Image 1 (cartoon, helix red, strand yellow):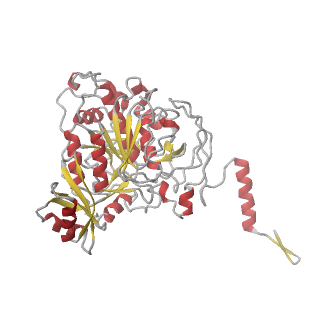
Image 2 (spheres, rainbow, N blue to C red):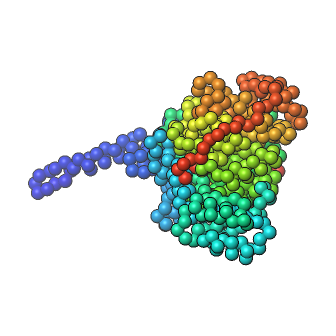
Length: 531
């Protein structure tokens, strides 16, 4: 109350604030993470290797924070703090921790982030072209000038057996027009816009499920790891920077590469994706003994973007350094040069797995997931429902947990995050389990095993939401024999079955491009890498 002269007047806002403060003190709620949002701070006991979480009160996930690194998490308790790094706060930009944090909600019920990426790719003032490999640098520069271009970079790619140049458009031409004109030159084989790609993490909102343990239970990881943990299998993670020193990666062999040649530190997305595969201390990744090639192709700033040229670099690095599986937790438009790289991976018997995308049910197909040689993965929640923002389509091979997941974050912390990015990572780990059990498996055999052992969800049979169903690690590894015995000779365990008939080829589909141009080895080491 405030005294005015001799009259006492009620200060209603002050009384309400006092009442709310008393309520907070009496109920144990902590301070709000952001205005009008509060997050409960329960203690979660996370034992080593096989997590068994205390089922305390439900954790409310601030819809504005889901998907970003909650920097107040420590190793044993969830404590909400600032979602931004000090540098980001100094720059007035908190977007570096989460690609989806500022994306607008699209009318289809999911984020418009991937569709925005397609729109943005039309405006980029760069093109990529295959040029005559016998030309000198000076000759390539002269070629570029004749067409109103400036060469940024060019290199020979062993993966596709071609010399590719990256060129900046100097004048006012659009990328499409510049590409068409450049391709008409006799020294140029192909040319196209340098398309943009976006990391596929997402704002999930509030979930009633337990974000801390359902993924390992749904995938039956503990049972699968009794058979194999993916030892001696190399998985390339093409993503943003990874925190190589995170406690979850202790003893894991992680070899870093940087297709960006940047000096950025680790990023929440790349750390979480890697964690979904090889976590093994307090969390359980899908293939804790796998070797990781951590290839940085996405920057930490902004929405987490990359381009056709950088992705091609990353694919080339993965193939040249022995990757058996390539995880691609990003999305963009149909891209001829990337399709060529993916076809080359398949020809080398390298398994490719990608996030279906987070653009919602009305989105056109997103790539690389929609390429025929790629295992496209949609996301499910703790109740086996499809993630609302997950893409749909006939190209979806199967689904995996991807909503409200507890995964590693930079600086020894943890985050609760969602998106088809992490579903893809889990399935890449499952592919590593299969190759750890039988290295002779071909990519179409890995796809077949994963799909035929998946637990059917939605309408009976394959569908546009879940594909063949939700992945089942134990059924998959149980469905194949060890060593090099042909897959057709394997017994077929419950609950999934693998047909003894010849595996069908990877599905072919005619999906048009978006018109709007998105086992822990105890003696191994974490190798130092570029920052």
